[in-house]
Length: 149
Length: 82
Image (cartoon, rainbow over all chains, first blue to last red; front, side, top):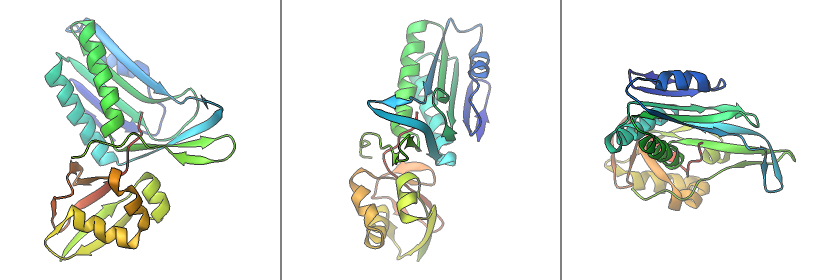
């Protein structure tokens, strides 16, 4: 699924994420700083070896939540462009599962807005990861208990 | 009666063995009524209830929400994207 407008681009896809395409989209003469965060599959957590992550997603809602969070970022910082993409299904070690990018006139706002988007995405967007370990065990990862509504 | 579709993901989908359920509820029904109903049938829903969020038609809502015929309700366990 995808929603692309002049200044916002939100993506959910099973194929590998294209960081170059994200950077190209974020480039604008109105910005002086672009911040890109890329989350990748970590092979080792302590002494547990992950062979892959598998992502489940409520796609229609995830896309709407991405748009809502981007709207909030645009109210708080002078954001010129926003890019948010999440990969679904199987993501092998070292490959990207999430890409968040922000372009703003000055770098401090880009860092802050990007940090806000990835941190809030992890609490709000209806996406779940399952760890598949080298010993054959699997485990659905649960984030911290969410705020009550 | 209201008929609602309940969407399940992640651990609930796995434990209940279905990605979606169709439920008939006496009207008026709230989100809490729906969860009571599900909890009676699927104990796993009760286990997760303290940390569960509800979404109706793709928006987070409190359990006090009144459900309407045809609503799409999702049970959102703590998310772990990224």
